[in-house]
Length: 248
Image (cartoon, rainbow, N blue to C red):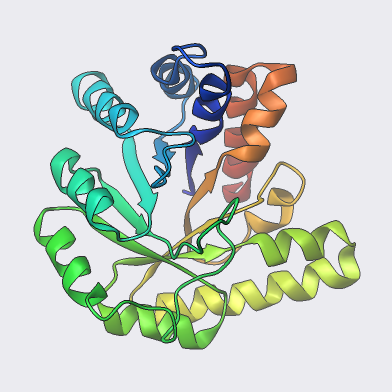
């Protein structure tokens, strides 16, 4: 069964554009959970332009007190304040993502070239704290092998290249999917579970949900954008139905 982890960053982006507490991120989490979402994701950035450390603590408290069946995933670059926050709240999963200064959103995965020298120690300390570690990687054999060597539990495949290819039509979308399928098999062969995220939506999930060994998809921008018109609870259920039909 593929799990959906709803990224609520964009709810915080809207709140922060005006200041105050509206829309309420915790209310968004509750709506997602009530609609059946088995996971919640946040990506607190150093500039706190959307999710803040206070949000992370509040979400962790909400899930711990009322929704222990829901997985909490914190994404981010392995900077000291982010790692301290992860160790403080102890989410179910920490997805480590390389960050390029000034980027609007994630644009690359880990490789031998951009990996900090202390990343193996960071991974081990998180695991010792009971936190599952996923590394954000391109759908290529080399970074997947690298993630296994570093000791990660999972990889999250960076799916923007697939989403762009899919948008251009079947003649590009299908070969891109096949490349991701090979990457997923390579990860599985190295005992890495497979997550995926970035620009997945109801359209391209129709194909991507069939990816072999897919454990979890993290979706935020497309889901929250559609929710502006259709309602958050409705859209979470739409995504769950799309994902669940992969097992049918």
